[in-house]
Length: 271
Image 1 (tube, one colour):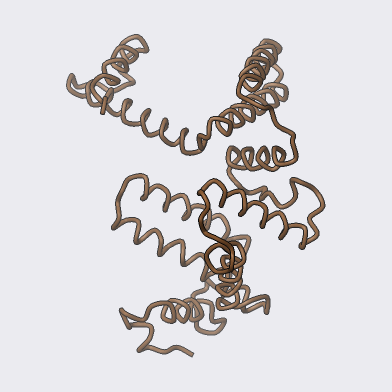
Image 2: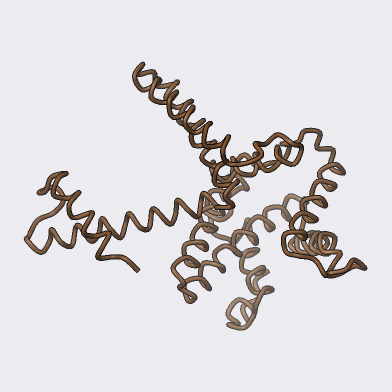
């Protein structure tokens, strides 16, 4: 049953949002599109909204971040409404579950452990607690429950971290760099054979070991690649702007000219 006063209350907060979602999913009076949605159909939007939050943070746009966080919150509300309708869980139960988890994973804040620890030690303790939780769930393998839907680079790092905890890791970056050379050679060999499956396989191996190098260097490969994507975009847009001054576009230019402009862009766009 709709509560008009709550629906239109600009200060209605979380109860307002939960009620709006329940109304949207009402089988009799709700929105046909919203009623049709499932966990599976909404999941891609959830991932997309998380990336848009990250984008707003990277751009330092706080007004946009507020909106994007709302969009991401809506995804949680959407999933919990579907779960509630099926009798799996309610929004309050989801909130209680994460609250319980945070309390359990921070005994140095909410328990009797000392909080006189470094951030690095707290991260190690966090992983130890998570490992114990996985044992409780009956996860048998070291790599169990590393989500398969994660971005590939992020999942690669998480898989490597798990393996490293049981000693399956190179001791320093020397061996990682040697492995990069080995995988690059194998990729060239696959290219020369023009075998599409082999090319994909070897490219995957090279990317995986590059992610491993990033982990050893304590660099987030996703963040590093996003940074390079942004840098490439700015430089290419600079090239487009320079060509536009003469009434041309990249299609009217050639590689030699654009490469020269690229080098100029690097100097022009230095911080």
